[in-house]
Each structure stands twice: as structure tokens, then as C-alpha cells.
Image (cartoon, helix red, strand yellow):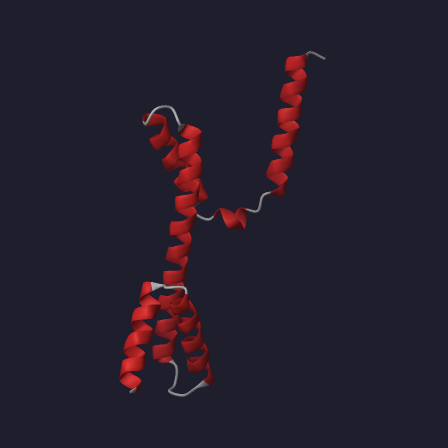
Length: 119
């Protein structure tokens, strides 16, 4: 076997091992962000790999923020439709408070208005 074939084989084995060890659940937003970052990096001086890594990080961050905001909106809607003083309403309020601690803007705003009306 030539040196070139050995290196290609070891790269293929390494890529296959990496493909089987990654978890797609943690890649939310990474694919689209990475693609956009790769294009931007390529246009900005042939730095596609650096752009892809940066785009993946930013895309993941934005997707997580969006997911938390959607979760807060759902909890707020559930709280409003639950009977007053019910265990479900208490559970929804606790979930909103937890998201407010993470600085999710919708949850923070709801918690501030809810505390002001309770006074």
C-alpha cells in the first residue's frame, strides 16, 4: 500500500468513527449556521472552515434561544388557560420562573408583570 492510500484510509476510518459518535440532538442550528458561515468565510478570503465553525456556534446559540422563547410562550399560554390556583398553574409558573432566571425576555417580562399585579 502506498503512503497516499494509507493516509486516505486512515482519514476515512477517522471520519466514520466521528460520524458514529456524534449526537444529532446537540446539533440544533449548527447545520444551517455552519453552511451560512462557510459561505461567508469563503467570500471573506477563503476561510470557509473557520466560517463554518463560527456559524455553527452562532446558529446553535440562536436555535437554543428560540427554543427557550417558544417554551416560555407555551407555558404562559397554558398558565392563562389553567384554573386559578390549580397545580397545573403552579407548575407552569415555576417553569416560567426557571426560564426567567435564564434571562429569556418573554419570561422575564411576564414574571415582572405578574409580580406587579400580585402586589
